[in-house]
Length: 348
Image (cartoon, rainbow, N blue to C red; front, top):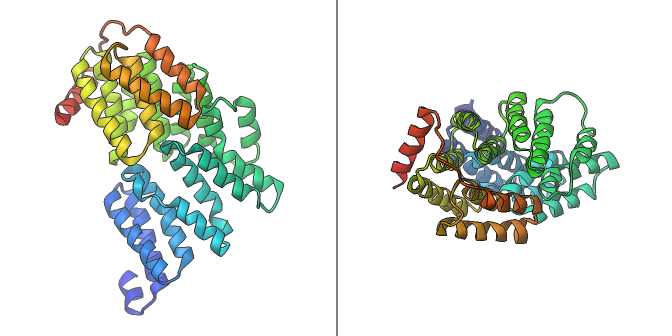
């Protein structure tokens, strides 16, 4: 179809096919090809004044960007196009993408502001409430929402969409996390993936965090296996964080610090402030609080959590980790130990 569309000079159709191709490449975990294809289609759509095609490319680009290169994510620009051209039908998808990206980047206040702008111009109160529910997880992580707000928010959605069911489960997992119910949180994060196998990386990553805080070898191994099923350098960095924890609680402090340094470097490079703070919380739980690297990480985490995110529950978890005894080195499954050791060697 693509050669025919191009031969006939069908620019819109050619770009639509390229957007579909980029999305298919994302689904095949060929993220670099996907991003190159979608960025090219997006640019050409802009040059040819085809805003619908441009917005579609931006929506699908978010999926590849999450896996490999967050800096190419374009939901903010896409929302501006939606407002400029009145393409309201794309707003829910783009707001969801924007909030997810903003959560990872620590741009929580900006996410709330953008959502409120669209909610304030909703066609009815129901649509406005649905849009406002998109920042529910940010409110949960700040300790400003809980089980009652989840019931209200997800009661606005009809049907049995597995993505909606997975979203509700992830919200419940985060309530358990901020309440310090780490075992419940871990089980709920796994339920997210069982409900919707294509769920984003956040559930797998946060399952890894709470498994480490529990110092539970079986749960850590399970979280690691889940992460291994996905592709992309962002997923690989989440996996690196798990392996750093494995090395730490196994008594291999030097390997752990090597892996943590590399993980923190990438989070800073791509601007993932939330994941940066969560990794530093891991260091507080897994390593001796007297280590200079842990002291430095904890100080940075406090600044992010308190000054940027205003997430007091996460600050309590950090301080709890710093106060917890490190304990004796813990035995982990051989395959997990070997993977962590190999990753540490590769990072040196």
